[in-house]
Length: 67
Image (cartoon, rainbow, N blue to C red):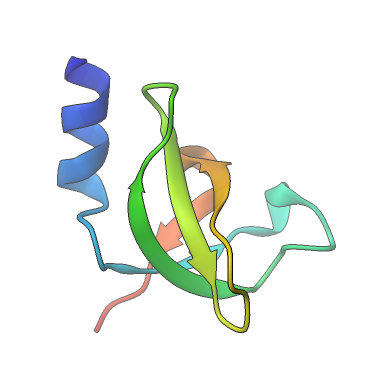
């Protein structure tokens, strides 16, 4: 579970993120909030702005938003 701990440090719960273009045209540029870690060590659970349910994204597809 050390991977999950590392993910939490990089993207703490409640932090704002933006989806990178590498995630594909449907998700690229969207913003949201980290709600937790996923099943796999390098995955995050994220609720995108305007969505009701969380989705799972790989940490390589998200960037932290300063704020």
